[in-house]
Image (cartoon, rainbow, N blue to C red; front, side):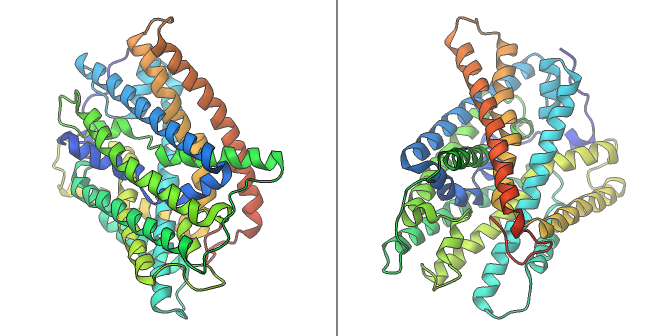
Length: 442
């Protein structure tokens, strides 16, 4: 295997290694447990109760297993004197292929840019929701709220390192628990009220439509569990990292168990096959009164808005890493004028670009599904298994080897079909698309 890259500005600054295991748990939880859980009732709408539970559980088991294997590969490399800080370099060196480096770069860029744009878009929508409840006839448009969010993101982007987000991400973890409980309570209240919509859990009538909906739903669930930046998160741990990431994973998946199932069950129970791509919108229908107390919906929206600021920063770290690899000078201090000015300029430009794209692309649910299919599935369901088999070389007669091969084959096929069905839905929704629209489609 090739030697890992020598110390440079981005590993010394953006990916500095000072964290404890619980800090890695905070980062990982913020990367996975976010407002995308509001799409779980919509995913169940395409799968039904039984298949929905099965897919949600299996995705959880497989991703935990996958992340565990990746952490073991990283630990193995560290013990051999080759500590890797980035997914792209880990994959390229273990798989011994130059094109793998660029494959991971492209996929990670797509994921991180897509999530950064989606985060700003959804934060703008939350801010618009809060504003409309206070001033129903106000004149401000969605793109103006997106601009406000972008300014806050620019300010937060100046937190210089991934490690410096640890307190922000702990707060984000608490916020995810808070708005999940509010959402669950609101859905139960709405489902049991006299104004509750009729409960219908039937699937699409046509076989072809049912299949497309199912694979779109699977792609959404994959994207919800995905993160695509585990090596970068593990890089924030103070060496030696042995055993620390498993503890962080356990913390993360404890939060996942509480939030994912409660949000999926309550939302799908309340709205069935009428579940919106963001179930919060079901609670405030256009043609009638809110189905839950306004203060509950408003407080939930505030919690979501605040957590989105943290999520946007977590997924921007890879972009900052790339930028500072070229722009920063490791021989000078983190807050030296030489490094501070380029950091302010480049990170502000990046956030401004994401905000501009968010104002133009109101396809939150559809983008989420596509990112899951062609982004998270290869990075989180395929490459970790392949890298583990190459690194540890389990016998081809062993159960581990065949479990890993089965997961790779199944999820490669799922990703291909999911990408096709997700793009199909995007095309179908395209008729509702308008540049700088005042509402989010999907």
